[in-house]
Image (tube, rainbow, N blue to C red; front, side):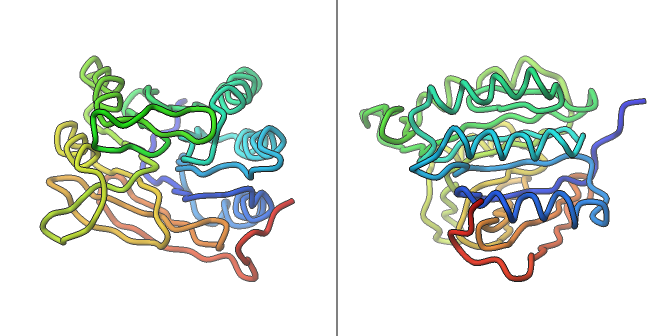
Length: 239
């Protein structure tokens, strides 16, 4: 029987901190009673990205739950990220990279997202070698596929925060418009600290940086959020 997804473990930038991820999934996960995991980049570290991707994806695959992720701006070149994602999705069928695309979990929940930095300037250069950066129109174009699905519950992932005029918060107007247009139950976005806010009808969650030991557990049905912290984790801790 397919497990219904209600609670999602949300993980912010890992930045090569594989040990905290392994601790979280190995020691904390059983007590969290989550049904899926969502990761918003950055995933790797500059000097060993393919190895880091493999360690991250293997850790996610070993836990046996559905997992969805997008890369962050530093996860370039895109070829390395895509190759490792492809290999791991073959080895672990419950893993799905959703950079510029979508996947369905439990037949009910649609996960979709766009990684990298999304910039509002339509003439901004598109970059995938030195970093991942996309003009806003590309994010809009690639996520049009959401309309092809009729799943009532949607979860969107972005590595770029949305702008919030009401709260005077800086961010991408394009990402804010995408959230308002597709009205997900939850949008999970990268950020420096754990935070939550409302944007239209959607709950926008920044789960915190896992490389600092911070993560969040989101109930996508009632909108409750619990922030957790791993003891003894410092920035830059890697395997």
